[in-house]
Amino acid sequence: MGWSRNEYILKGVFLGLWVFAGLQMPTSPAPWTAAGWVLGCTAVGTAVGLILGAVRLVARGVKPWQNWLAFPLLVLLESPLLISTASSSASPPASSPAATSPAN
Image (cartoon, rainbow, N blue to C red; front, side, top):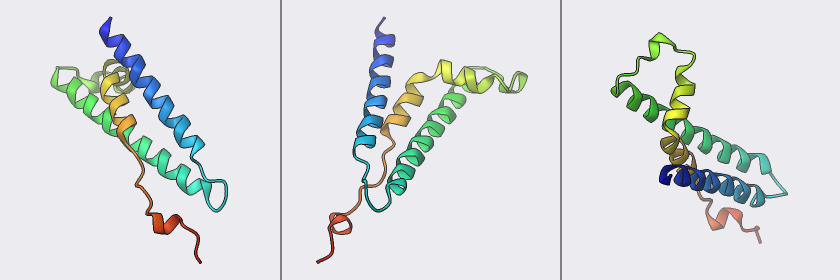
């Protein structure tokens, strides 16, 4: 029972970070640049979680070459902690205050 609670908490944190990122989007000059950073960091974090989950499953004896189409789904289902943690911890670089302040 404890693990499912933690998984729901991690999913809630992940969705909360997406809502926060959406609310922080600038409306003027280039909102797609900020969105690109958020999406890129999330994709990199998810890829890191998938790779770590795949390595862990291969170390446990799962052979991905027997059914390579279903292996990514197996990694998603068997390693939700790694994927959720890696996706939630990836964050875009902070911009400097000088770069965001208007020029005088």
